[in-house]
Image (cartoon, rainbow, N blue to C red; front, side, top):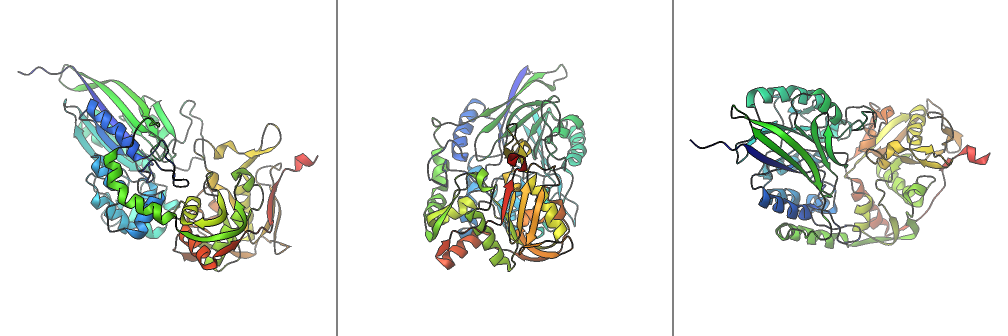
Length: 534
């Protein structure tokens, strides 16, 4: 009789929140950077040489986020999505849908899933008609070369309906992710009896991993900490969504989160010991992040696979579409948020024209946004407007607008030196600068020295006080209109109209139509610190 091996080592490699970054390219400058799936592919191949039977999982947000993805959707939607082509090439074992997989609608998402040579797992997303998992499988079971049985359960944050356009998720229901895990883990343990149970969760941690203190408003968007402490039977929890770099342990559960854009490859190593009854037991678990640097060459096969669409994307991005008369450059995102700025005035102007209203709010979406100066290309537009947001017009009251401004004012605090600073809650555990809005069509002043909830010290429209009961039609992006970013005052408000063209396209069309846009600023709002006047 063949003698049983006494020990076994299994590895699981993880990507998450790659957001379409395949080439190690900064799309703003075309310079090479130490990130992207092609660089991670080199690390993946090296790890496979060491451990041929390892498992490879993507934890979501793979098909949206770069100009490459935008070009594919607009110009080559009948081909295989470049991210999926790369995952197929690298022989991924499974993927979990992230919230951004839904951004382009159901037709594209179904095509992405059908083109994948691996299953998509999400136990909590259900077809309303059949009450069956919308993507076929809630979990998979794999057996290592040594005979170790590994179960991987996929689950996605159920907060998606708060952000996504209803048309994109019609026919699906999103069950509470924590309750879904509580339901499935014991079932998998009983039916499959795996030696290792992994939960791959496109969601993050709602509490500090060391202290357990809440790090965000406990809305249910992120439930990773509760999963570790409240669900017996989980050995490994793969996380994402927050774009954090995490490798460690919570409540005996090994946890990992490998950043964003291909910053890192997550690696879970599990050592097993054979028991007297022949079953395997976990002896040791470790998590680490493999971070590519300039010495790690991008995988040539991945580069060649994606090169045709990448090359076409670069040429597309360099098309000139207009110019700006004056300066809309953003020298400092922080300063841009302290007072009316020509770039944000332009953004709101585009929104108001597209929606046919005269009140608008918008956010500076990225700390890397540079605004416009001189000649403008599609590259400039897409690097300032990287999300495929559409616009929604809500009918709000003056009271709603005041509450929204109070929520926006939470972005600021007074630092130890008494100067205005960014609220740490908007920096950790995930940067949320995009949840600070700037308005056009009203006049307002926010005083950071005042108590939270009492910071709106001036609010007028056309120079007259805006009364609580006055109704105003306001245009904003669809994420905000759904209450995203804790703007609860918008939930359930009447929708006047929706503009289905995404914002980047609206901006490009506006610039092309006008050829030359004017940098202007009417100074309708500002942030103040009344204590600094004393």
